[in-house]
Length: 237
Image (cartoon, rainbow, N blue to C red; front, side, top):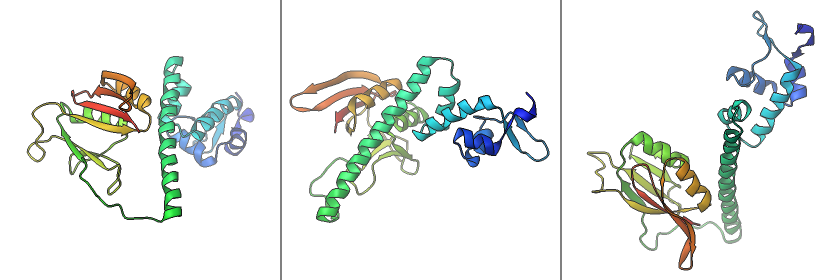
């Protein structure tokens, strides 16, 4: 194609709806390289047929799909894989929306009644220690399934923030500072979307112990075993 038919980066930005900053970044990460880069000036030029890919990138970024997953959706030849990427992101957005909804509800309460310092009126479990066969495997599992942040200083996954009611530490046994229990542990977690989290756990390598079920005496619940055999009872919040 003649350079006369190529689009300047400004013209391409106008047609694609992407900013100049975004186009430069997508070039740097190899997601949307220009057709030609002037070796002297570094000026980028694009083919007209690249506009469609650029618009698709823009559409996927508007729903906050990470760049690596945008690349999968655009470039993976398997439609099942592409659909799985979008479905997983949809589930993550639904959980975030649920969390934001709860935060809005809490703020409504604060606006109407004021902000009170949380008081601990009765004991509650805030820490469980588990054995794992591989720390890296455990980190991958709990970070993916529960979005738990791992604190290396205390060898623990942190769920929620102190002093909030959702605060919980899942400590990984690490001799000699964090000796573990005699065998696999069992603990329960409240989750925003039981069925979604249950499926995500299975996809991440968990074994299903009990499928999601409704029971008259407790919230909808299920049970999975993490890759190290620790059992996790999941409860719908």
